[in-house]
Image (cartoon, rainbow, N blue to C red; front, side, top):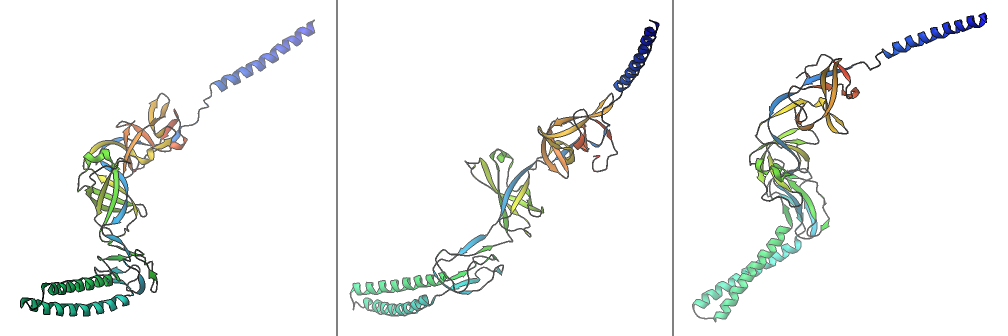
Length: 357
């Protein structure tokens, strides 16, 4: 019996020791902070700035004077006087078609005209003397008029055998070659005045009250991102019924480096400054809810972040306007958002100059 008591006492001591150990262990674990360490971020303060009110659009560059040159009559090409890319002057000969038939007709009709004029002049003298009937004089006059008209018609056909530049400009790619027989309407080439370029674009009709001729426009090409100054010169007199957009046209002040047909982005200065809350572009991230910024807030344990969905506006010089969702003076994360979540702890590093504004 005594042996059983000793064994029981030993078991109590052993299990008590184990229990005490486990209790202390679990107590230690319970008091341990398993939260991740704070994330190092760069912060910026939203500020109120006065920005010009702008309107953005997309458009296509066009030449104020640009044509597709085509044949007005059929015939064989006997001479091409220019090459693709040439600079030409107004009236310069570009292409000649075979006109031998028309030249022969012209010589015959010139001879007929000389005879018709002589007969008319003779009959005009005789009619004054009342030596011929009026009907003979009338026939002479009609024959003269017909001869003049026939010769003029032939000379017009001869003119159509020669294609000349209607204005000074740059010749495009020539689509034909010497010896080709072409039909009326065959495309020959294009002619563009590259010194006078415009851009056609459209904006929603609701913006019409803000528009007026003379507004300054920045034209930005998709190819080079170069900015070309332009001026609004035309506002359409009606709204497109299909798109509810209003067509506009701007003249580009300096067109060197542009070509007709280029796609461009336009920023229209509406000359109506307004105050906007702005932050660096890098402070805005995209989430499933939309454009989001992480607002830094002070808590008992330090600093933490709260994601906030915002409505963004125009972008200018690396900063973006916040239309709604943010107030002046809010502190937001500008670098380091990729590891953040709601309630995440953060610590701030010294802000570089470009993010401290």
